[in-house]
Length: 181
Image 1 (cartoon, rainbow, N blue to C red):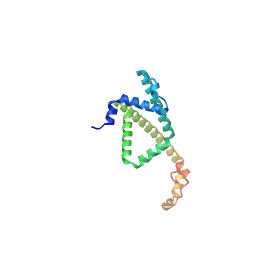
Image 2: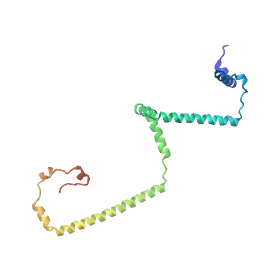
Image 3: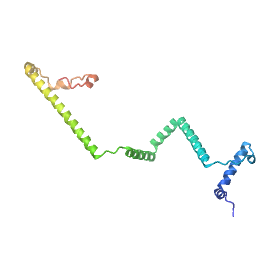
Image 4: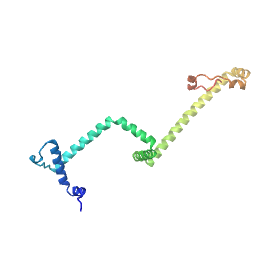
């Protein structure tokens, strides 16, 4: 039967750690037999583990800050060229959207509908008032300027003249130009 190194390392994890530590010390030029073996309490081990985790996270943050543009460029490139990746990312975004979207109760929906209908009715009343006022002023102007209407009848344009009317510039068009007449 042959020696299986992986099986031995799996069965003797503590020895492997000890051998590795001794090897690192020898490489540094320190005699491992001259040093007392360190014994850490569970609290000290937890604190060391937390400290090493913090160091790792700080290093990752520094790397991410230094390579942010490159990572973003690679992501955009992959998103544009890989349809499977794009579909997967879109599914994740859709899931997040629906998970974080606030849920509206039926009472709130009914209240929103009622407010919308009230606003529409108010806008309709205002519009009708303005329309009536415009009609009244138009009627008054018509009474006052009967002679203008007679003048209009005598100076009517031909239908062909409307086709060749030159429109004003863009500024006039944006300010609400609706034609010459």
